[in-house]
Image (cartoon, rainbow, N blue to C red):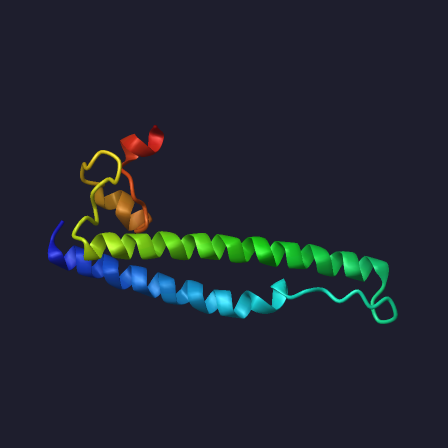
Amino acid sequence: MIDAEIAEFSRKLRQMLDQVETDKELGQDGTRTVTLDQQSVGRLSRMDALQQQAMARAQQSRRDSQANRIRAALARIGQGEYGYCTECGDEIALARLTLDPTVPTCIACARG
């Protein structure tokens, strides 16, 4: 992989990380504790609020996981190991990296 391609992947990964961090900040409200004030909220409304909270927490977990994958890819760039499979050391296909710049393994290792 040439330096220009690595620089482009680095730019794209940083942009992805910025977006994930922005989305994470915006999603913080949904994960807050649901108040169970029976005077202001009915039973079904509380159940709906708890379900929405659970979905928001799951989404935050997915965002955290994605941010970790992006940071790992950026670390591999910094170490000069980006574009090489973390399992076997073979080069990862450019098309695979273009589809998902965070992917750490070649297609053969991903299959198992």
